[in-house]
Length: 139
Image 1 (cartoon, rainbow, N blue to C red):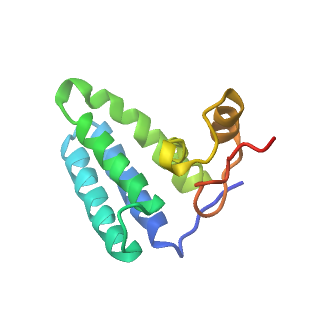
Image 2: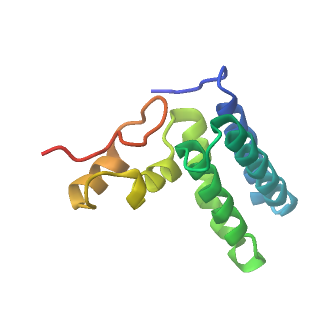
Image 3: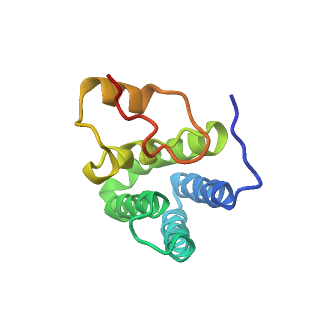
């Protein structure tokens, strides 16, 4: 059930990000700033690695960065508990809610949004590698 993949650089990135968010959740907002910076570094790394902005790994990091920056203003900072829990789920169990959300963006799927697709996307067991196109509805 555990998907701890210490040989994968992205796992280390997400572990460090989860730790920084956890630090921020202890009342030290510098943890959020450092997490934003680390996600920006990840984004740059994966843009260079994938050599295209449309790569799924780039999209996930971009949307994570947008989310982190959006909830940074002080009144919204309690919302950081959502990505903090989500990243710990990613690091320990391999379940990435953000990747599942990104997989539902229109250019990342071939089938229309449906109840069945949403259920399959969010309630399927974690998968190794990218979740992109793993939950396409088959009839």
